[in-house]
Image (cartoon, rainbow over all chains, first blue to last red; front, side, top):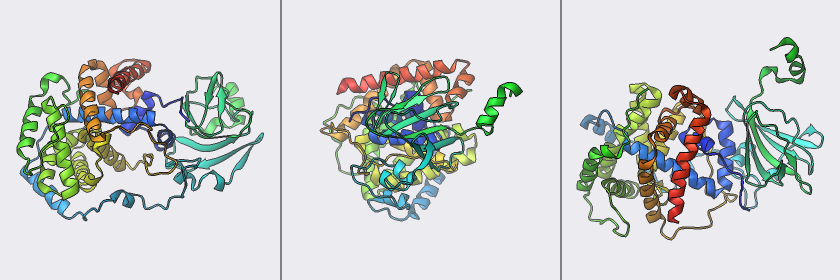
Amino acid sequence: MKTNHHISDALLLDYASGNLSEGWSLAVATHLALCPNCRRTLDAMEGAAGALLDKVVGEHPVTSNDWEAMKARIACEPVATAPARVAEKPVSRPSADATAVLPEPLRSYVGSDVSGLKWRALGRGAYQIRIDTGDPATQVRLLKIPAGKPVPEHTHVGRELTLVLSGSFRDGDDLFQRGDLEEADGNLLHTPTATEGEDCICLAVTEAPLKFSSWVVRMIQPILKI
Amino acid sequence: MSLAVSIMAGTCHKEEKVGVSLLARVQHGQRMKRTDRISTDQDIAQAELSRLLAAVGQDRDVNAFEAIFRYYGPRVRSFMAMKTRDTQLAEELMQETMTAVWNKAVQFDPGRGNVSAWIFTIARNQRIDAFRRRRPAFDENDPAFVRDNEPPADVELEGRQDAELLRKAMETLPPEQLDVLKRAFFDEASHSAIAEDMGIPLGTVKSRIRLAFDKLRTTLEGRR
């Protein structure tokens, strides 16, 4: 299936430049695993960065001392044998086949594919799983929305990324299917609703809730003017 | 804020010397593939760097690595200094990056881009590690990974042609778009910080990014 809703250039540039925090990056990287189109743009961005790096004026050329130090250092490096990339990730990764609903890097974050998950009820037939990251600025969750029902708790502040992993949802006239990424900000009033016929599983990344975001405080906020 | 980056096409004289000196360093009998259209000194430098990096990856060729180190060391050091504003840290990160280049050279895939793009990604990842952040990435070997269904006939040739097209297209970008890209890649500035710094609205920053990559994408797609 071809993805129709892609990462915006501004967001992808943040990812390409290393400027996007872990929570948002998880949604971007998982979309990239499903979308060759955005991977081509990522390649173009990294190519552009490389071209800019070529044009950087090095203020100090490397000296003979610099090179001797470097040479001594690489002499101490263990001889890398061909598949060196395996050594980078000592974490045991949950296995999967081509029919896996959760691609990497998401699957490792969750610990298994969807069949092995323990969902927690969110009310009105919806379920969620919180995903731990080292990024305090975001809240990352898997959501399971019953067919035909709206995404619950949908009052968010700031940016929100929603990546469809199975089933689909509609938001206005737009249909979002597996691999599609919806990028919304707090100004956009929208009501994503799971399509009839199949539950929708999606990855949702939002800005971490502020301390004052409980509904009680939200109700009295206008009174207290905070 | 001034960036120590020159981008105009007219400032390439130093690059020519680098291209020539890299060529002079070729100590192996291997000849360069002549099937591709090599037309500028930059391209010669890139094709040559690609060959040198392959020699590092396959033969652990220290002389080839020296040429790469002398070319990229100063660039990576400046790149690191732009974000860290700390000469000592920039030096350490440059050494970490070049050590990673030595160790990972065998993984370099000429079909996915040129040497400069690859070294940028290694430098970027070192910088992320230095600030103790994580950047999740996709895994091409994952069974659930969706492959591109139009595999090019000659990935290496195509990768190098793409890099060449990109570099030429970059030279046609308006300076205000290039400026935004440089700040994003080198200063690692947020879009709102870029907007504030340049005294322009956030929407203008985003539209410059979109216009720049529309142009680069069109250039690459036009070739296919």
